[in-house]
Image 1 (cartoon, rainbow, N blue to C red):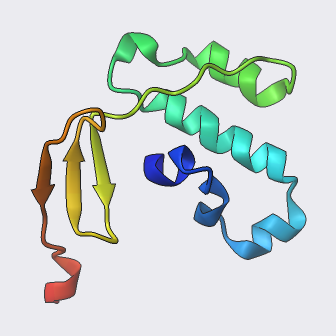
Image 2 (tube, helix red, strand yellow):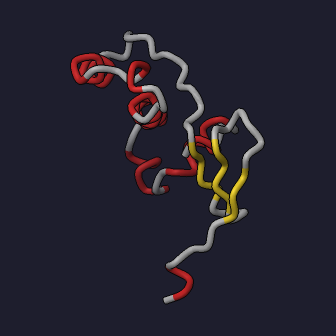
Image 3 (spheres, rainbow, N blue to C red):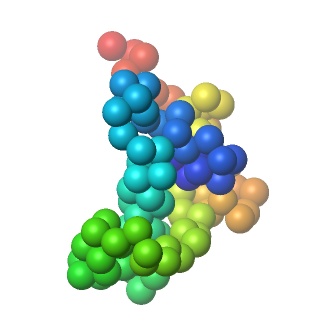
Length: 98
């Protein structure tokens, strides 16, 4: 999610049928709020009351989410530790073994 968001491609996360029936701005706002909720530092995460305000008010300004501590890039088979660093670990998908 973080990679697509940071590349401006967050709508690729969404089922195309949802894109037909829901306003794109609302979808992007929900993704943005979700990214705020999973920030590495718990102090940077919004409170539940803030989340409710963000979801119910389009005028509430959203902070820019910080990069997560761990990013999974499935297309390349990599875990990227702290997107600001160059630490990369390869992973194997267990699903492909079944």
